[in-house]
Length: 187
Image (cartoon, rainbow, N blue to C red; front, side, top):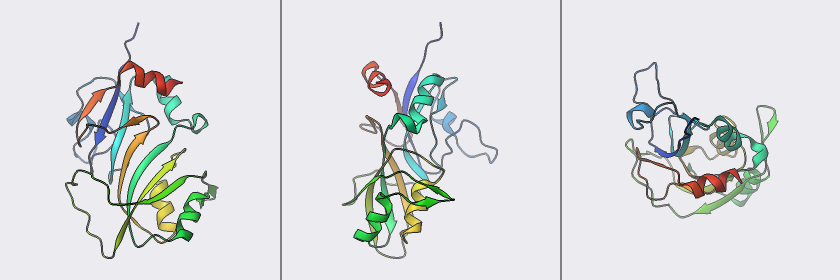
């Protein structure tokens, strides 16, 4: 019988969500020495934060299928001052590439306490921070949504995936999920 592994990893900026890279960059294998686990979903190179890795294909499907409604929560630094109109547009769903996104939750927040990024953000105007909770995850969805309302994303950090958070992890660190966490996600 196969022993399943379930990991949570704090993906640093500039690291692909894969174990190989044709461009020769550092990858997940430079941080995670567990064989045969794969990321459940992705974060692009410029995004940071929580990745879940496992060798349980059913668990990956459960995490990534929007029908299970597992929220993904992000801290998002945008260039510009956020208006009520922009929040309403973001929350009510937007048409991106002819597909309407699901409704989401958006809050303007004070600057969160995050570890410094290896490559600092260099804004050209005032910035704002948002907390965005999605129940789907289309390619570059948050970046495309904020750009559509005139607020380009400067920094994007996934802080939670369902009940899992980055608590006590720093960029490049990982840990095994405990049985209670796995059970909460499956239920």
